[in-house]
Image (cartoon, rainbow, N blue to C red; front, side, top):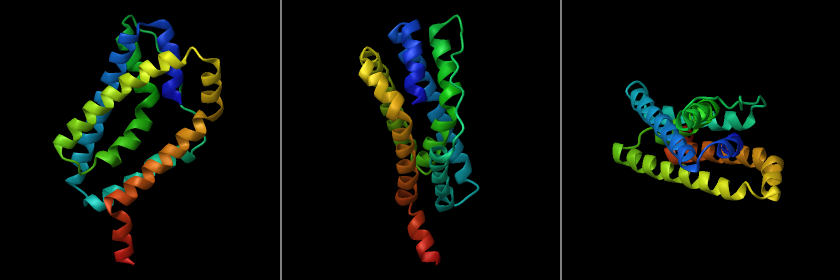
Length: 173
């Protein structure tokens, strides 16, 4: 929800292309950090243990404190968008992408990186189109946070299931 709200603000101030480039650069930075941090951690811990990181998105869904939603002003629209994206979305993105990317090959990482950068651009375009509808804005304000929390819980459960952590725990018991 924070991504959408900051996108609304940024799209009213800057050209769509600048916002898209800023979000793509932010996605590139956070995904790369998640992947390489995951690679580093696999050198120290068994992969099935790292899959306990699936608890991070679940934690984000259950916590009650709000993130900083401030828009940071810079001379460059791309830099302003990038800084806003990194300051608002870093915790969420790292907690979701780190457990998902742990144990993936470099080719899988590159595929995910390209796909998510394209999806970030599509989301910006979609937000630009939907920002004109007061009904959509009302729905985002009313239900956006609840839906985001459900998505985070689903991602965390998916990490537990896909990683084999649950079967590891069952075998251990």
